Length: 142
Length: 142
Length: 142
Image 1: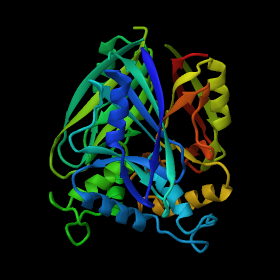
Image 2: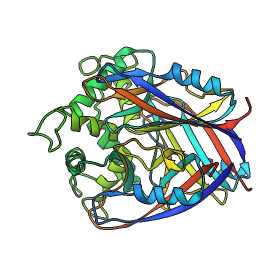
Image 3: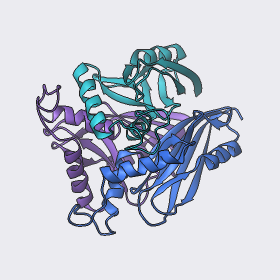
Image 4: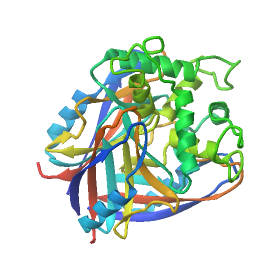
């Protein structure tokens, strides 16, 4: 059994989803591990990870609309914590409601995603950020 | 250290919870691994995995009622994405708010669930579907 | 490759967050595994695990306020399941919307948390409880 570790820097364009599926597949392919478990860890509290449909861009727009209604932006009138602006506290809440970690089985050297599944980093802040993901892979059989 | 992989096909009766705890326990028992980590991956974007109380059926009804209020069904007036009907986009959102992955420690050849915990596949679409779960187990000591 | 298992008992003071980061770091340090994967499993259906900012206490207050608005407490008028009181069913729903499991990569013998990340057990019931976490660590290289 072997382990691999890595990092992925994801530059976001502000609030919204960044598809990281291709980069994950490429990283896993380089590790020469056929069967195993890939874990992604998002090192932030205002960005997160989700798995969603990769086909229709409307799904991403509807999801963002839903989250904006569920967790409205707002400053001191709505939240105590607003040091970094009206999107500060909503970003923390959105990160809690989604996830900062995913573990994906590896089969034949590839993440075992369903046909329609893509992995996204979700930037919850309005401004662009560089987000860091920690990667861990355990398995064997390249 | 050893690995095992498998698949679980779960036939749903439409929207609602399917208890898969027994099937998971049976699968793990067959693998002859005493201590390890079991990972479940749901290959869909409109079904997901949750852990909830196995005693009271009212808990599942209340949870479903809550999610229907939180993420109302609706067609084009409410969501851009409604190709497959008014439960299409809500199913995607519900999947994001719950989880497509669970990793459960294995102790003495069994998932280390609490007394009241059961693992459910949550079908978010109104119609029945066959859902596929990917299983990964790593560990040793049968 | 080696495995370690453990348990963590967390005494809560009623609804709210308990920072368990220090205890997790201490437990991992004792295991003498440099690179690996730590999995936490919360054995309950009315408490859960989250990762959030460790700096501002206001973040935790705002998060709790948000969850109380999203999932209001209430007895039989609001929920079918209220055997243990008006915080019973809301606690189950809050656990589903957050998470009962986290898997954190281990680097240089420490959880690879971001600078501002802390791991919290979230007690969703109003009264104090003793909550049990199952710990699993796999890896090597002390």
